[in-house]
Image (cartoon, rainbow over all chains, first blue to last red; front, side):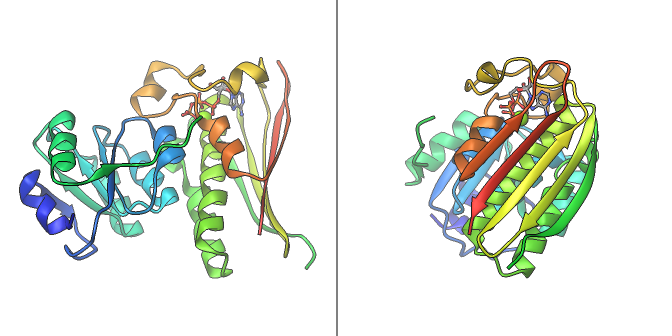
Length: 118
Length: 140
Ligand SMILES: Nc1ncnc2c1ncn2[C@@H]1O[C@H](COP(=O)(O)OP(=O)(O)OP(=O)(O)O)[C@@H](O)[C@H]1O
Ligand SMILES: [Mg+2]
């Protein structure tokens, strides 16, 4: 799915825009546990999260995730936005809750990540 | 190539504001050194987990990173209180993190597992009331 298609689907408000909207997203990861993101995530993943602190951006940075969507209208802290700008990570805000966001993306054709067994 | 120290950073207890800075600096440094991006990713994830563990669970410590033509070695050493039961600490889901830390997204009890998964060699010296020293190596 292209990011351009995801924006209307999840009613995304852009907070930090770095990459262009042609970016092809392959999978998504809905997660509020940073170590789980660090365990499973792949590069072309979109991270959906209810957390808003700067560690979310740090986690994305370490795993080469380029897009973060904050769900349920929870606006990230200013430090989080600053850090994302500095690190070149795109931030968007969706008014929809996590479950709905994931459902819509799944319906739209995104598959879940291949999870390695622990 | 002889092993060379490329990064050395003190990590303070509870310093969430700067949590991840060391790993971020390392990532940039490895990029400049022309290290393959998947190796870079593995090393920086390991370092980030070690860095956050020092911030969350220890009295404070230091991270050093060494590089040679064969490998990258990350050394994370802190001044205690040590890991009570290492076998338990490696169980997925086991965490002693408090609610405040969990609210920030840590405390999944997955960190040590991640470190093991992403490194080629792992050595741990610790024990109750002791310092903890963890050496993680990724082959180039
Ligand atoms: N440097 C350390 N000093 C003392 N105890 C530690 C240290 N690192 C880890 N531990 C102990 O080992 C446990 C497991 O660590 P691990 O990194 O796997 O999980 P976590 O830090 O609790 O959660 P996560 O890493 O998933 O956010 C910790 O909860 C803590 O009790
Ligand atoms: Mg940890």
